[in-house]
Amino acid sequence: MQDMEQPNLEVLSIKRSHDSSDGQLLQFLRERERKMSGRGLTKIVLSTLRMCWGPFVMKRIGADSDTLKIAVIYSISQLELQIRLLKQLLE
Image (cartoon, rainbow, N blue to C red; front, side, top):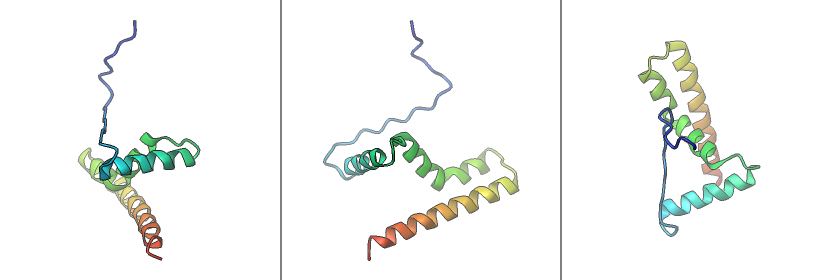
């Protein structure tokens, strides 16, 4: 019998109507995931969350200033890349 409880895991489940803007976003990410060699929707979502919120979490858990600085610089560079991709949509 498999233990259904996994107390060391954080679980996030997102359910939205297919015709809502959030549902369309989730569908887009799922389709993009298929084109990215099956990278995995969970990995895409976590990568995006980490890019925007990772440094805040690191600060909260007490990361040293050098580690935090590296994380902030990395997040900024990833966000700048995303901004460039967004600007290309306007061209």
